[in-house]
Image 1 (tube, rainbow, N blue to C red):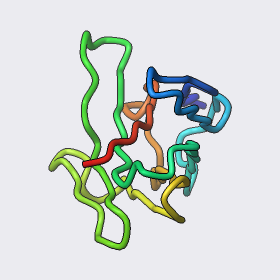
Image 2: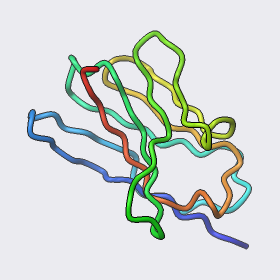
Image 3: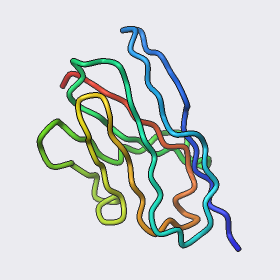
Length: 115
């Protein structure tokens, strides 16, 4: 069996005094049908939710995509297909990875912005 390691920060506060919460770190077996990482924040004016992937082998993060309330998600081309962004409301959203593979092993971050 191949294990897939996915992780995220559980809580981070940025300079605007906005606190983010993400799902706890997860270890997932290859072939898991659906992996969901939840994100919430307490900044009611932050309309845009962005998701990033950081692989251990990379010095930089890759933008997966973003959602703006009541519009369809926008994805970077390499994440189109198996990656889905969902938005429940202004302050809650999730990243879903369908049929996770070892190449998806990374740290995933959510962020938010006013525009």
